[in-house]
Amino acid sequence: MLVRDAMSPVILTIGPAHTLRQAARLMSARRVGAAVVQDSDAGGFGILTERDILDALGADRNPDHETADAHTTRDVVFAAPTWTLTEAAEAMTRGGFRHLVVLDDNGPVGIVSVRDIVRCWIPVHSAAA
Image (cartoon, rainbow, N blue to C red; front, side, top):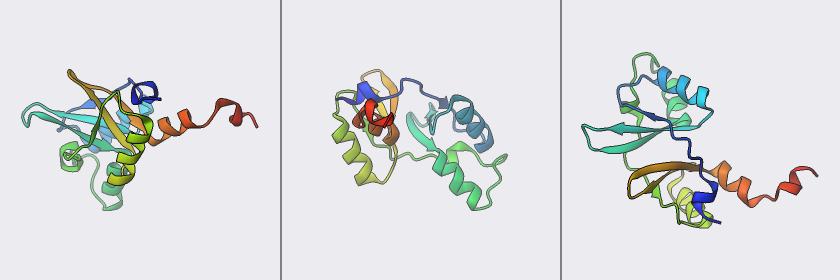
C-alpha cells in the first residue's frame, strides 16, 4: 500500500503569524494533529503539530502571543505519494515524529500520520473482535 492510499487529503494550511491559540482552534475544528505553515516570505513550508503546541504550553508560553512561526519545524521530511507505508513509517521512526507532509510536483497534497498507517495495516475485521 502507498502513502497516497493512506494519507488524508485534508490539509490545514496556516500562516506564520497565526497565534498558537488560533492554530489549536483550527486544528481542533478540522480534527487534525498538524498544520502546514506556509511562509511565502521565506519561500517554503513547515509543520506545526499538536506536540509543538503542547510543548509551548508546558513551557508557560502564552498561546495568544506566541506565533506559529516560533514553533514551526522548518527541517521537514516530506513524503512522496508513491512511497510505501513502510518507507513512511521508517522515516517517522528515524526522525522521531508522527506526521509527514506529502508533496507532489505542485506542493502539499496531504498529510500522513502514524495513525493513518496503523489503520491501513490493521485489518478492518480485527476491530470487530
